[in-house]
Length: 226
Image (cartoon, rainbow, N blue to C red; front, side, top):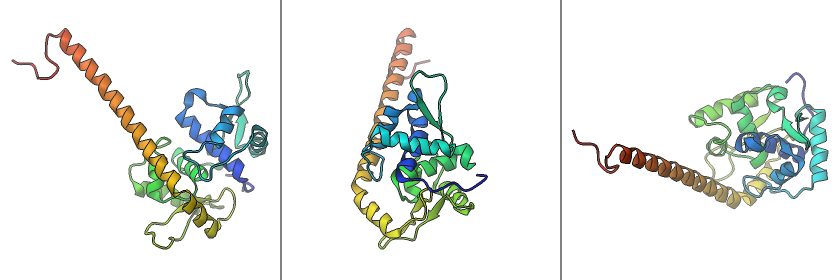
């Protein structure tokens, strides 16, 4: 980043996070229309805090991000669509962008939580690799993330982005307490979706094996005999 950016508003941070997230999770519909971007901002899962914003409010946030070059209008589309430019403006690799995005969307998290929640954006080998990229973001001038002190009863530090300015520990604690259940529900839904995806792949492979076995006059349940 050649010069410091101004602090983002909470909605600007949400818009930026949604654009990066949807680039990876729904690439067929990315860049996003204003309607899709608003729906992503108001999403009730994988968001903390949950928002309820209108299209005009999102458009105002988009205009602010465009002035910072963090968001651009996509070309060659009859409907106005928007895409992010975060990696280039901030000068960060995709791994760091994935972690920063999850922090923008979900608030303070431990390295283990970030590794789980960023899996659809980037697959980290272990928690240590997550910590390494977070440390790089924290060592920048100005810093993009901060390591928070452990809350009472917790063994792991949480991290938070600084895109909206300095972090209030009291505000973080209150937000964390109010979002405990949604986060647990979201993680369960993600695991269930992954299980369903794997089950579908197994079924497809099973059907392929059975078809090939039938063509060869073999049983799919036992190996061929010499």
